[in-house]
Image (cartoon, rainbow, N blue to C red):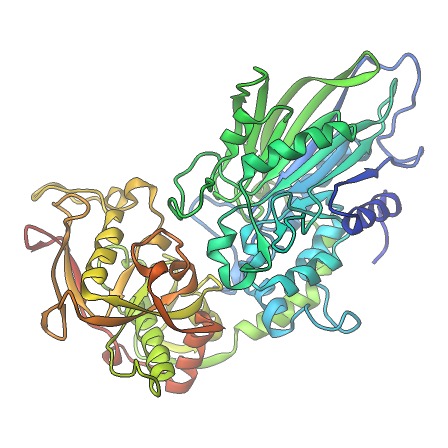
Length: 607
């Protein structure tokens, strides 16, 4: 791969940053004097100078504008487009406009999980093998070529285990930052907390831009199996208070935080940890010395939000670009010399839409071989289906496709417990409508069809719950619905998402039957809960097949995180589904589908 402009300087410096000790790294990133965009240093230079920090977040394995679950160009109703190839075109335009030596490119986390492209290089042909024979990770290949300055760790970076994350880190030409990702044995940073990049500006010393990386404390819950006893994740605000003075002492004129934490959205895990999940606004309000925050994790588009720091009265600029490479944030800075040091005089954020530009052919060409290999992988035929199964109506009524997920999970757990003391207990299973666009076509079924039902790398566990606890679990899940009086008009667009609960935190339970009375307030909605045709015994014991996210406390569902674990598996539920279809050969709803639950109002079905 030929080196393009600034490659030698920028990549050598970034490699040094990635290898530096966790006390932070100071990196010179000056372009050669002849580089495009460089300006002569002379006494007549304008007093005010400009530079731009660009940012992405929650890329989730999107390199090309391609959907591996549908094997087609990505498409949605809003006509968005995705991928680093699009972002690369936008970034090059900004660099040409502003000057290549006056721009930085950073990311706020969640890069290596989310598509079959990145799954393939974590599990099928893994990068965490011998360094001499391991393939190059597609995200590393693309982001190195695009000359990223730094990236914060996201929680999904830990989905494949620390060994895979370290192998990915080793392939990067820039540092993965995580000031609050600590070694459990000594509480020292396991990754560089920050990096300082120098930008040459005329008329004064090099401007030092400090980039602090912070990740989500929820990792301790969501990826407990991968990090327990190895790493800890203290609070974002608390950690930033420790490191901001150190960045200033290291000479940072400007501080940008790449923070894998939403602005102020509701938490996914409740009060299980003392620190909040989405605290970027609190970070800006409570920690002095921050100029800008690149926000991640919430998958929202917020071009600019201004927050006043309570200690200094200074305005901090926050921006969250839409996930998957759909938007690129630009923090446009203006600085001037003040007593020999650079001072920010103006700062604004904006987002650029990736659907306005073509894919960068340089990135597309880099991906040719890997893309082809993964397309062949996802198009393997694994069975047939008697009828089409769609998940679109799953939030509103029991659908066969959700029953299929429950059936597969229950079958796996029953087989695992067959020779144990728990073999006699009935097995139930939770499932959520992760992907409203997923469907299994009638006729030939390919691997991507089954994989599309389960888009997360969750694994399966078995926990013991009582009948009373199952009812509590379902009551908690039923908070997903807004209350609707008998006779009121039914609008699916407003029926769900009560209290900002996402689809992935709405569980149904396979193996029992029940009604959800949405005319009642949350907490009093589950009626006619039965098992095997009889009202459920509150004291009876059941095995609940549950994904590791939920079992570890994700969503803060009652009882399950504290329940006795009787079995766990390290293989993804997605693979269990693929294996089940391969073994059966034919997907026939008659083998697993039933009307297990209904939405009702005063006993009258809503649908």
